[in-house]
Length: 407
Image 1 (cartoon, one colour):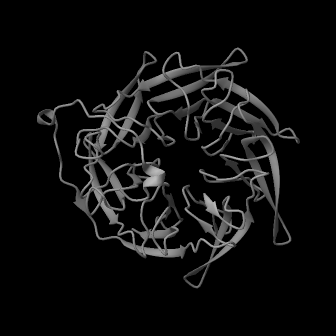
Image 2: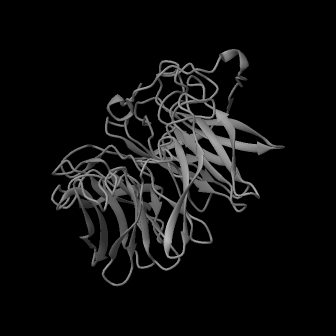
């Protein structure tokens, strides 16, 4: 499938018989796509944007690229709209001694400072957390925390950051920690950005190695994902207690390989995607084409998982790597990195609409892998008009694009 160096994974045979599974036909909608910027991949440019974009207060778009720039370690970019056109500006080019290869997007504070994570490199070669501060049209980088390779504070932050109500930052590392299986950390906004490891995954309940960032509920509890689980971290007596909310069955009907962050609705239900598994086993050596799921809290403290959609590869997409975004009506929107025109296609943009307990999928756009982009590994965001914006890791002139879908 497209961009195999990013998407290649080891899979096994799905053990669910097709005779028991309901396969639905996707609905198509003619939505227009506009490429706002195609990455050139040169020394002053970025390449392979893998993460979600964000809007700044002035309507500018901010994002990261995984590679590109002078040192080939990735960049931070800004896109500015004017008279219907978008101008790209590289705000920062990463180099390995401070950190490299951002796989996640950015967050912004009230002063317009940008924050993010770097999955590799850094002063201690374990990745880093950074801040970019604007001043007179220039941007300066500050490393807030440098992870130590094989360190107990964590290694390799691949997910993004999230602010709490006090301006503190929370994130995850994929490995490292007390047991080498990843961590959840906090950067306390005390004027110095003090690092604190909140939790080390130990693997005892099957939860380990988170690849994505976290979300918070109104009470300040944290929610996240690992390859095969959804977890919650709750404050209790000055400590953080981890609870597994759901475990996906390997090669399972309900999905597996959860690589994205979650979305929570106003009722406290959680929504997410799995890259593999599901009702259709026609993709990736019968490992399944991926799913969209919902987790609903029960009164007794347990959570019930519901499969909202199974992807089919050809027609409606395959391998959803990113999380979801919801509109005011409760419709869900997302991307798949593959599928579309065929099982080996270049991905789609999709919408899921709820109706009487069932969800209908509409394919909004199918990427061709050419000038329009291909293999979106990131999720979507809305602008004030309700249109969708995102990135693809490939296509354009070969290094990915920033796109808009008009709804």
